[in-house]
Image (cartoon, rainbow, N blue to C red; front, side, top):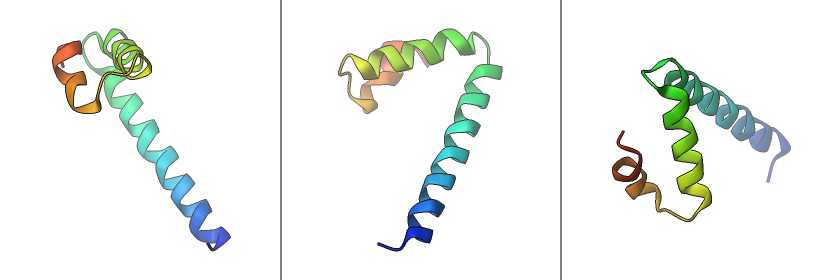
Length: 56
C-alpha cells in the first residue's frame, strides 16, 4: 500500500473519531453515555446492540 494512502486513512479516522467524541461530549449526559459505549464495546457487546444497552 502507498504510505500516503495509509496516512490519509489515519488522518480521516482521527478526525471522525474527534467529531464523534465531541458530539457525544456536548450532548446531555454525554460523558456518561460515552463511558457506557466504551465499557460495552470492551466487554464484547456487538456494535449494533450498544444503542439498546446504553439507552442512546
